[in-house]
Image (cartoon, rainbow, N blue to C red; front, side, top):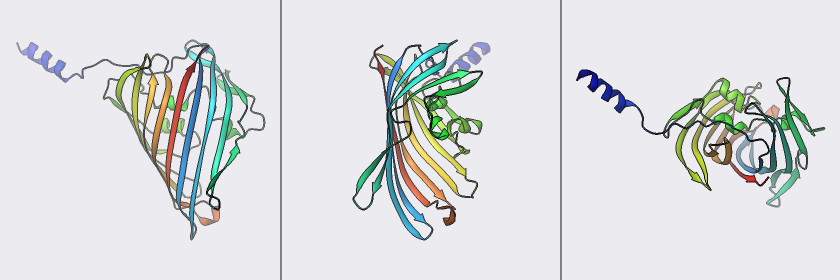
Length: 263
């Protein structure tokens, strides 16, 4: 009788529900059109002078999963149909557009000897080249193990370095939760809510803090991010005016939509 009661108690303590393994499972030959956009509205000061700016940007990519080896993507071809930055002209209240260096390029990323190599990026600054990689940076928000609806996980330390490869944010954490799993257009999708509370410090002593809330929609069968939406605040402080870096707060947003194209 005692054993039965103990077994029953253990069963009652275990969370109910199916576990979902959310990870990348690329399919060779898949083509995906990805459109992303962002906005940044800043209010602050540069030294003793007030500074108010607004900018926005985005990209439209056609991504081909060109080669998959042992379940991992080893070659990707990216057509950069659009890549732009727009800055608000305070005098005319109009946004001035400029094409970024990747605009109009076709870039191939391939893994050779354990490292990523890119072709089609001649003349493109290295930092911008790295925005195109074999691994979608958003997949670094996926859980390390199978999870049930309601399960949470955190990303900190080394995990932040993999997401913020420029080293802008090294402290704090990102908290994620599997909020739901449901059918979207005939595909079983995971909905992951994220909350960023991260910070960093520049060599010049200035500090920055990022607070974001968002949601990812992930096609479980392939691990492709089908949509993303996030918004929050970026705060900068302790910047030396001599460095021409401002102090203040920016309202930031980001959106992404992905569509699987016919082969």
